[in-house]
Image (cartoon, rainbow, N blue to C red):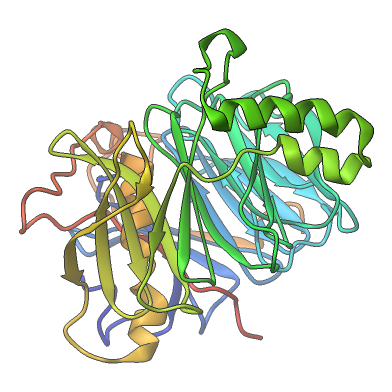
Length: 383
């Protein structure tokens, strides 16, 4: 089964369960229906239809989430039983949501308001709302969990400030300023596996990497910058709150300068041969890999460039181009309107997905033949 070939030209959402054979597809021809495949066997496991267009699908080893513009459906992934329907949620035309991938928890985050930058944190295992986080003054544009599910990053539509909150209590841990001169559209947020770094990509030529550490005054060196920092901190108490907030916001620890600005991309952090790297998948059809100095930061050099596609089909790039970096990062009506099931694929009675499909499997980026797990979605559903 070739997901990015002419056999499925209208696919606009595809989510793979880590490196398993489980793939979820949604096509433009039937945007209200989700099809679940065992792609190595080219076999459909089941399909579900909903009352309106599907905008996003998220999955981990316990839950599968389907996001509509004003509803969220929570399924048990092993038998696809519908566990909970969250109806009449705030309008979410972009299908913005995030699902933690930790084995010990399964938190779901989605916009909690259409008029303010609130994020609702929902426990998808115990099926109850945990808290509502007042993340930003304007609408939330991007959200992402850390691999452990203990931190949540968010960015607003302005794209100037990025915040990190603890999970599940929603306490603000960090606040970073991406820029001051212009508003941007944040296209992705991604933590490193150890939650020490956070990267943010946008429609500009710069990808920012932030270091998540609290500075201890006793550990500061008596440098000129430290001295100036103390002066600004003292002065901020006499300044307007907006100016004071800006002075307390940390700046990027490291940056990457892309060759092209304004092109949609997705960035992720990953360890490759024990080196911290930034991966950027762009709609120009390439996967770029940059080395990051975890001690000094600064400008990150480009070390490798992979061509993701042989052809120049822009529609193909739009569908599949931004998938690979996001995939590596993760490796790393109240009832559905209808459902149907296909032939048995060797699972236990009452289950749809074989147990072995939920096991971890390493992705080896050092191997040129390795095909990264795919998880892609178009920017917006037409119609």
